[in-house]
Length: 310
Length: 279
Image 1 (cartoon, rainbow over the protein chains, first blue to last red):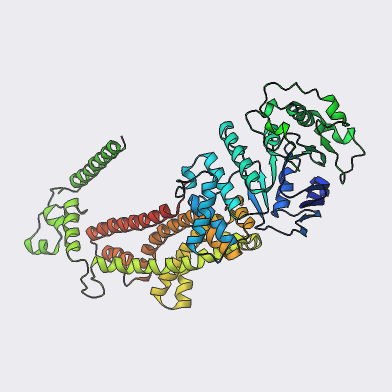
Image 2 (cartoon, rainbow over the protein chains, first blue to last red):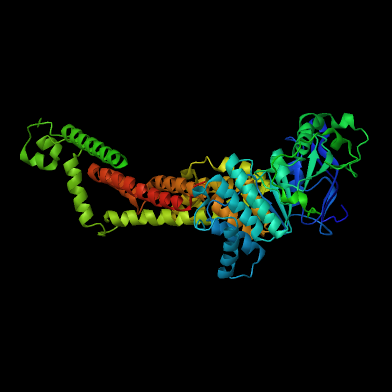
């Protein structure tokens, strides 16, 4: 974790509480991400995940601390950081093309109409919406709307994509396809992505690193879990990987019990040096506890190759 | 299904109209009782006394008179005898001017108030007090300060149509979805461009609804205002014909006021549909 493309340094978010005091959603939160990595944050509702994302996006300001992106402290929103909203947030009076073009013209003000259209079309094609350019959001299904949201975010070629539970409002089948799409696009373009999710499997499939947050108020970043699965994992045989269940159980255990009692269990938790959990690597207690099933019929070309992940 | 429903509804409408006209016709038939009087005296009396005709005009009288008016809508025989087209034209012109001025003030002002929570809170008591004032209550003040009855009427239209537009614009602008604003913010869209590309289209249906309410109120008020200021206009026509005791003309005027009001409302309804977006 030497390359800190995104570095959240000691941020806190406090709201005025009842009786004149303040309630802190989280205090002294440190978090960093290298370039080109896909990171997911998992935690229960109310732990301040969305607040962290909004602060990263610049939509919200921390009560304390700073966020540094690519060597510069951020202040406010930026076209370098694209947000994919949970509710897709498309402008309903614009067509698919109009929505994407709106983002494109916001970034490149001097571009003429044809160039904007061509650029927007590239990203509409990329998310597989070719042929629906002139439809309005109301004519699209939930999955297609979120595709437009993704195309809009990608079209401004951001340094970071910020996603706030982008697939939580979708049905399981659509969610799966869109996860595939997002994974493909992020791998192809080397996009740095920060995503909030409730879905453990989604995190395992998409993320290189999973941040586990304890319950709020007073939430802390408890652990950073490195995803041991190879980069070229596929959604269909994910669960056959020998380390899949160890990883999954670790996260689920955290969500079920440890997220509640974390402060009591680990009073000496240092928010600046959050433990990194490497599942399946020797020397870690957590890996010793886990009893991965012996690999059955696996189709894991990634296992035999040297890992391409950084 | 829908076409048959429309057909049936149309049929019911026609039946109801026919029933109404029929009852009206029967109710205003000649009563038949005619007092005996000398022919000299009968010449001085109206048809009611000499032939027992009802004092209330029947649908046929109104229809005949309406036909007469429609054939010559724009005649001008002096101050007290102008065609209905001219009178309606004056009224529509007054409403149009006052209304347009109100649009020019209410929408930018509403935008400002809606975008600023401070202004919104600060101006709220004034708006709450000014809004319920009957527009006609302004008339003496307007006549006193403006010293021109025609402009005073326009002012009254202005003051009555400004409130629904202002309040709806404020509400529409203030309640634009946060996520759309956030989209504009993450795209670093400037304030002015955000106002025109996000807030205006998002608030447009609410603003147009306010404009539609306003045109309705303006049309209601112009009749009363013109009765007060006199001279021209459909409101003046109604009052003038009442002074002439021409109930037929009063009924025709009522009918036309209704039709023009409906048309104005329909025009605004069409505009509202144009800016409404399905979600």
